Length: 124
Image (cartoon, rainbow, N blue to C red):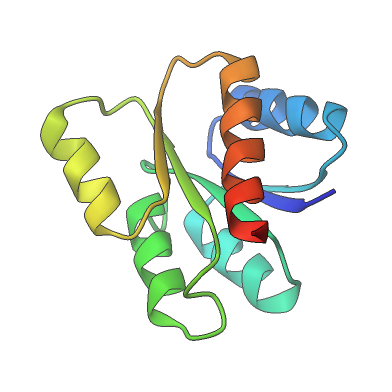
């Protein structure tokens, strides 16, 4: 299965997402902030990144922009996870280069389905 990076400063959400994706057969690397997410992606290949928008040191939006700007990660699938649900927030997320946008609270089953669907689209 895929190697998925999860970056979220909330340990409970990070652990829940990691558990659900591992249960689905994915290899998971979980980090607590945006800087660690970028470092991880640069040091080891991942197939997808799930990024919380509001994290210390570097937001998920900034991480997404950095990933899109680098040729080696420009096509990496990115899902933003956030409590920010206003229409403008969603627009900003997609403008930063996100492939999907999931609003907290979310169903772990729905998250898993979206991850699988995005990975399937990328593999084609």
